[in-house]
Image (cartoon, rainbow, N blue to C red; front, side, top):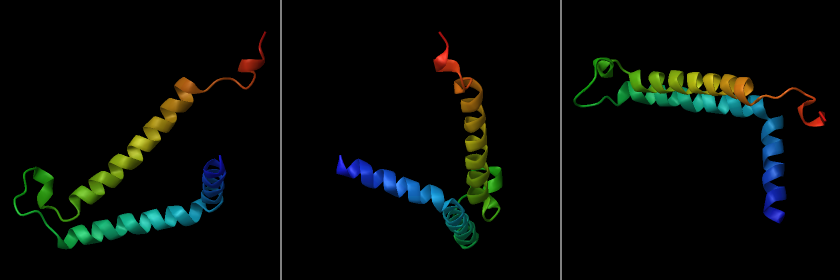
Length: 88
């Protein structure tokens, strides 16, 4: 039971510091793109692999699109009216 309170406290702090965590995540993603500029695959298998940073940029774009699509789908399909459970 005590661990649930600690987890709730951590999540509450994370919610309050969301802009800070967002900046940290973007910095990490930027670092990964920068790192990918110097570490290239030896034998590219796909058309875009020869472009430095391709997979890093591709994954960032894919992650953002997945979040947006899933968030929109959740609001559309799972969202209920405010008085949904109060109806008789």
